[in-house]
Length: 521
Image 1 (spheres, one colour):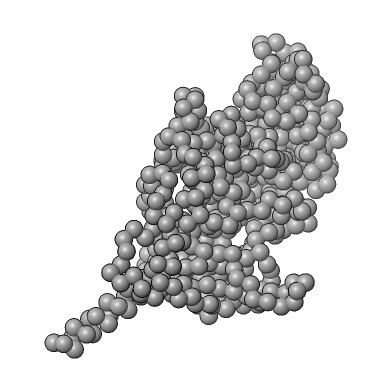
Image 2 (cartoon, one colour):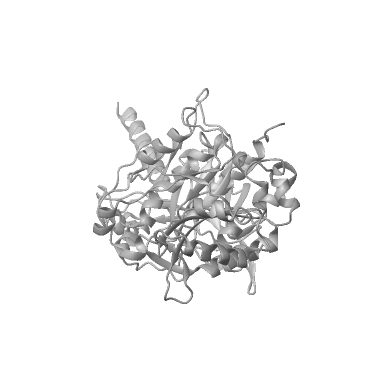
């Protein structure tokens, strides 16, 4: 009997050690969510893409990782700033509970009530405002919250880290990775505490494909299974020109941004109520285009006594002189010959019911963009090859019937935007899946844009019920990517999102465009 009890005790000790080992990874994130490793016969979503993506959290500007089809339950994901790396070496640290507690105190006392999570981590947006500083404190924590002290506080625990050989001006040395994790799921997502360095993107140009950060799938021995990077797609349409040239714009999956000019270069954590609900992007137009955005959603305000008079707005908030935005689009088109849809969608300030301001605006658009504007006579029935043949690749759209009738040689009919005007993840999912159902599908060559973001209601803005557009975007962006990689991808046309660095919608678009066949073939 004594031997049996001893055996049971040994097994329980081994089980406890394995549990401790699994929860104390070096540089763990706040949460890990995903889908379990599939058993034989389990159904898994198509497409079966084995990939790893690096995104940026809109609120905290920290890095996030999303992985798909990582089928090695003993393997790891590591994050670095360097490439190439030959291999990684494991390093074990032995710590006591008292040592560990100092790194988990903040996690044990979150600043806000934890939000509900199920399945792949579908949180709702919550309610009420959140203090940003407290939010950052709760973000910079390890995965598992320690709330009760074990019976024996001096029991040693194992912390697993990874390092690699790095050469710099000081010679060769061992360098620890920025972050590591052993995935519990075949498909999953995790936050990290690594602050995104936006200077990496400042150094990028149209020849850049990877920048800043590199993530690796490795096995338990540190052997690299695959390498991945933070990606740019500065010329993806030209890169696929032989394939997509015979497509109409309605037949392509075109990644875009909502309120594309609603950014602020000096944006910081201490936002006020205006910036919390007016900024929708973190990068200027050129950087959005470098990332692969090809649909620019523009709102224009007119200020009669101002100089300049035309501004890029978000609602009544004016943000940038319009000519600055137009110049970025023009310069990029001249530099790359990429096809860009510039969609002037709303006129929230100064236009009134008269048409004279529209006349002024169309003249400004024509003067600034005339050497890159695609001929409207090609129409939405035309194919991309016809646009490239004219050597002018900016499709200037205008959402006003007067301008369409009066300036048919200048502007194209606008993209049809589909809005859900919803405030929660489940409502957004329901709306997007509904507009993609066969019942709602409309056969037309005019492009259709899914506005794949949450929309706060006016009272919610006044009371700051949602905590700002950044918080709302973070609650949905990873799921939007998942939907368009999977069920919605085959039929998607234009998809516009907030804070696009928090998504991989561009990767999804390129993937599905390569699989599509143009009409008539």
